[in-house]
Length: 186
Image (cartoon, rainbow, N blue to C red; front, side):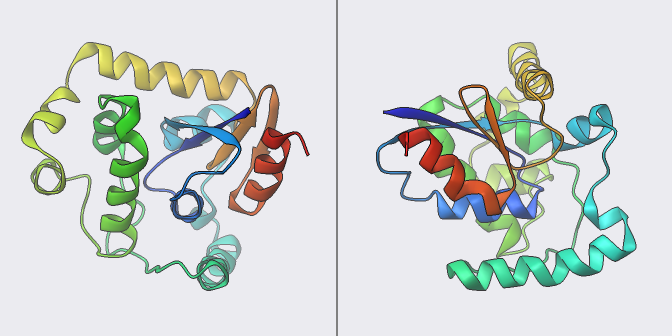
């Protein structure tokens, strides 16, 4: 069984779509959820979020709804976009690895479907727990999120979602099927 690493940020709409497509896992593949900071990746890679470029923003808006419809995924743009995801990404990083898929999907849906401001400590605590939010302030959690981000950059990431199968990188929700096939060895 091959391993598929999923580097994502809750503030990335394409990460949301990929996360929803991975709800049931990927049969025949070990799936590893890897939260990272998209803003830091974009800055370090010399990239910009598509929403900051007017022509890309117009296209992205249409494309996201098309992709969501194609995969039967509920989607709506939240009131606060873009969102500073430092706190929610730290919260994810502080969780046990086994909880990442379920909690990530709950937070994705809270933001991308229900318009919950997941950057608010109070709103995050209402979705998760006060303890999970408090853990995000601990040095080891901050260091692990930074390490995930640095690792993704060192391996060539420039945006989200980014998937790795060994050293092979796949970028974007539209490359998810290719990444899964590569992890299966087909």
